[in-house]
Length: 493
Image 1 (cartoon, rainbow, N blue to C red):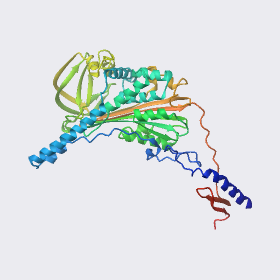
Image 2 (cartoon, helix red, strand yellow):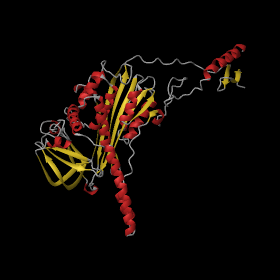
Image 3 (cartoon, rainbow, N blue to C red):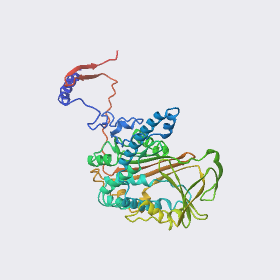
Image 4 (spheres, one colour):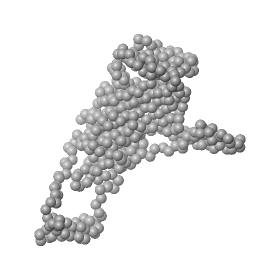
């Protein structure tokens, strides 16, 4: 027993020198969780991804959009003078709101970016859609574009050049500008509609990363940064929770399928959530069951919504296009192929809106679309629209390989702006869902890019058993390392 006491005293004074530098904490200086020495892993609360955050994105703050319906309700019973005051307050609030929106939008999307985005959309749509003749294909060009711009920041050399080529951009500075412009042009969080975008980067807590690249993603792409143990089910649950909160839980199954492994270096995730209310809603009393004939010929009973309203329509060689506007100024376009024409032929082949895109640098979306239209007119449009809820979960790697993006998926990958480790993209998933009913449309998408290290993994810490089921000693030291309590324990009685 004397040996035990002597050993504890030696330990006490040996620890004293270390303790002078401060007490040990399970939190790093940057706020990230530090591995617990007893387990080698970081405790993670799956219900609170904020605990893993190195920094949460600071999104633009917009003033609340004034509600005109509420204004009219307030006016009931008021004097003319009081009604005038309310109008003045409403007008001032409305001006402040639109001034803030204008400041957020800036100069908007210029012709060069519009043309590049149109070309990228067509090339990617062909790879994702033209060979799928029976299943639904749903994807978000804007969401994927933003995710690929983020990926450009982490790459260099041929890896970056291949990505930039698909995006129609010349350098990473253009990618940064394009992503920021698209983000600011699309973002909307108002009483009449929502287009909410969110980005995040999830870093393996066992590896080091170049802070400049992580900081650029946070600043230029409004990306929140998280650091967590990969291959941990609680980390996977936290990732799914973040995706679900930013997509209004529309893609829970796809989000729950996102998994990390110990060799997962990082995961880049971009989300997009949309909600719009029709400018002129469908009357539920005009909804009735009818037959939808699927691509394979099967007849399916579906509820169809009906209304007739004035609007502009466009005719091409094999299709008709018309649109339904939302209250916030966004629009949903519907393309109906002529009888006997497949939707693939109508959307992706010559003389159609996609294939007819004018993708020259000075093109705009309006001229690009108009180049595919043979004629247009103004008419009473009799709408018969099925209520639908369509979704898809896509593996993007085959399509991107066909588009010339190959290096990031193999040994030639260059992720030197992000890390000194050898790494490659092991998975690139895109999930999307669109719901339409009498009130409007709700939709969501996410792109998840998983990168794995091909370097040797960090060896796990050894596990030391401390089963105090026999006599033991203990020592309690103060902040300065001096012994406060010293004991040997021989019995529990």
